[in-house]
Image (tube, rainbow, N blue to C red; front, side, top):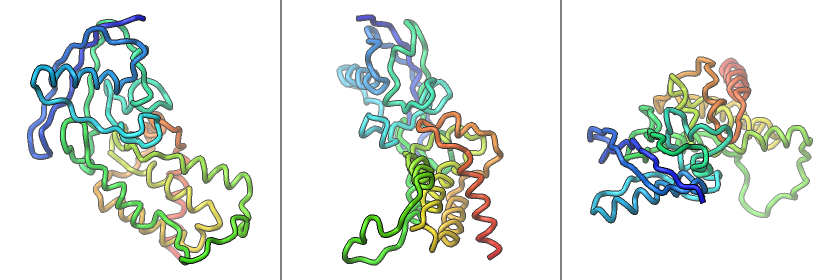
Length: 249
C-alpha cells in the first residue's frame, strides 16, 4: 500500500465573530486509498491525542449525495476532480509532499460557524419561498394521473440532482446563488405539476435569493465548472426567462 506525507494549511476560526487564520499540520503515512474526509479524520485523531481542538468540518452521507462537504480545496470548491464532491475525492489525486490548503466557502450569505463549517440556511429559505408544489392533503393521487413526457421527466430529474452544497456560490466571483436557485426552479417549472404556481414560485425564490445577500450572475460559468453533479448554467437562463415573464404578467 502506497503512503505519503501531506502538508495541510487549514482554516481555523472559533466562531462567526472571531478572526480566523490558517494553521499548518503535517500528516505522515497517508494512504492513497483514503478519501479526503478520512484524511481529515486522521488529522483530528492526531489533534485529539495532542489534546488540541479537532478541525470542525461538515459531512453526512460521505457518498456525494447530501452536499454537506462543501469545503474549498486549493482554491477550488470540492477539490481538483470534476463532478466529484469532496467526500468522494481520494488521496491518490495527490502526491507525496504536497501542500493542501483547505478553507470554507467564502460568501457573506454563508457565515462561518466554526473552522470549515458554514451556515447554509440561506438556501433553505430560498426553498421555503417557493420550492414546492401545493397539493391537497388526503388520498394520494394516481401516479399516472398526470402524464409526463420522457424528455420533460429527464430534464426535471437532471435539475433535481442539485445537492445544495454551495460550490456554485464559493466559485462565483460574485458569490451568486443563481445556479442553485435556477436548478430548483427549473426542476419544478418544467413539470406539469409545477405550472399553476410557476410565476409566483419564480418571483418568490428569486427575490428571496436577493434578500439573502447573494450576488448577481455575470455569466462567468465557474459555477457549472465546479458543480459536483454537473448542473448546467442553462438553469440560470431558464430562471431569467421565467422571471421576466412573471414580472410583466
